[in-house]
Amino acid sequence: MLLNEFIEHNSQLSNLINNQLDKLKNHPDLESLDITISYVDDLLNTENGATYFAGIVDYHPAKSLAYMISILHEEELLDEKVFNWLLHLPQPNSLSHGLFHLRASGLLKANFELLKQFDQILFSSPMIDVWNPIPPGEMTQENIDSFMAICRNDGTIEEKQSTIRNYVNQHLLFLDEVEPVQLNNIQLNRAQSTHTASVHATTDLTAWLLDLNYKRNPVPLKSIQDIIILLENRPAETLDPEQKRAAIDCLWRLSSLPAEIVLDPKKKKVALQIAKETELGKEMAISTLLPFMEEEAETLQMISIEQFICLIFHSISQDEKIDYWVAFVSALYEIQRGYNLDEIGTDNLSDEDKEICFGGTANKFCERLQGLSPLVKFIYVDNVSIILKIKQILLNDILNTADELIDEKANDEFILLIGNMQNAEKSIHRYHQAFSYLKPQLEQLLELKVYSIIYGQSSLEKLLKDFEIAIDDFPDITNPKEAKDFSPESLFRFAKFVGIKNGMLRSAANYPGFYPAEKPVIEANQDNELSKSAGETIPKH
Image (cartoon, rainbow, N blue to C red; front, side, top):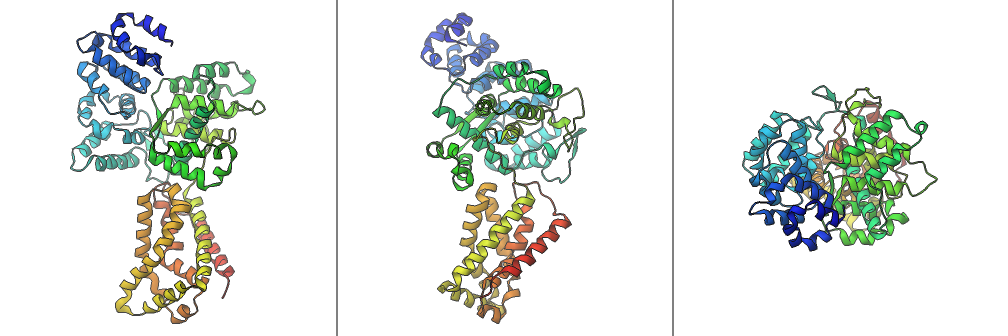
């Protein structure tokens, strides 16, 4: 919408508009601002109208405010007091996401005033990642009551938000379940899920790269409406008709939702680390953007799902030789009917679309469109692949560390340490000495090569704590002969007994970042075979 159209359409507010004209000239979303005004026209004509109008103009993103106001108006919850409360909420916040789920579940009107009392806990920006993954329409009054009970408990805001996050993970996302579970007769489909830490991290990276590239090379983007027209005009024989129908419905739905990808400094740190410390950073399309990523690393950034779709469509449609439509429509289809699909992707053919959550939406685009653009990335790491990867990395570094110790003073100190451990009275003290000796090496190895990408710092600390406890198994290698004839094999055996190879790897699946699962027998057998082969190839000194 052009400014003159906005002014003409809201001529009854000419005095208010004139006072904010400079800001309106540079406003990024006059259309959403116009929608907001249509719902609060009466309030803008009150004595506080100028204050309200200024608040609306300054509220970004405007679409979120328009969406929240429209929901509250339709639920007959919008009045002057609520409107003023909306304008004074810290930005960004998660209220639009919360309102969406509450209304979708039919729980908004009955609970709004109660929940509003705890807005700092429930609707601040850290809660965006809590609301986003919840399946639409699946909240119950019991869930709301649990939220309220947590809010009333003692503790800091951060502690209560963490408790709510854990509650959502367990009772609404079922992250502690191994098999697909039933929730109100809807199967939560693991096959369609893209919720792992590695996926979220690379989706953040993709969104950031696309946005940076656009800033460096600004060109007109096709709007979602433009994309829909192009899709509708595709020859009928080129696309599955049901997938095409679902894709168009999905685009219309997403164009009206206030979902955002939130890139805070913490997420950007992980994304930047992935770009710099993996093979991705060597790709020309990414390496040229690294300096600009570092410039923006400490800033908070929000990219709407609508903007993300426009950016990703622009990125994949640059090469005319590539047929991107099938993959693009497939992504939209799985977003729109994700909960209509079983574990092998068969549609239940229900007339009702059961779409996936906000968080999974952005992930699904990256999953289906990777390879069509050098800026679209998708890394999926599950418990099996990461365990095998850690095993290989640790084995190589254990052997390399042992080789380095052979001719160094540190080796003599380590041999002495092992020998002293034979003294039972001092064993506990010696165990802690051993832990202190190896902890820095382990921290560097795990944090830089694996865990900074997959896990958070708290998980690393817990992992190292488990390692410290596992040192109780150390006496298995306190044989004086082994201490004297120290070799890579004895260090490898040390690692095995204190938990690097066994205890840590077997418990790795229980750390955040995966769906926890017991390893099948066949994988355990494979582990044993790998251990044997590793032991046979260790060089002797």
